[in-house]
Length: 127
Image (tube, rainbow, N blue to C red):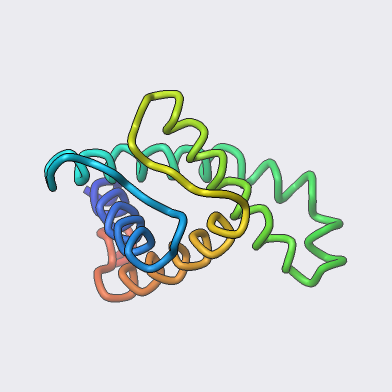
């Protein structure tokens, strides 16, 4: 159940990001198609973050220390661009137009995901 809540949280955060950040778009013919795309892209985003982010943190720990953690913003933007690239491989109508759109999109995603998770904790948080 916790997985589905996190997936839904990420999909909603991604939807809000497409509304707020110019250059991050989901195009579709109708609401159903867009909702399906958001869920699939949220799944891709979750897998990319779960697999690559810990490896990048270990390998790039010196950069994290030297930049006092600001390197994390660049890493998050690059992971957002990687999500866009993978979505294109699956021919999903999700687009991120360049580094700055990815940079701001990753920040908005992080903030909105955090806000939603504070409001709706999953079952693992209740234990």
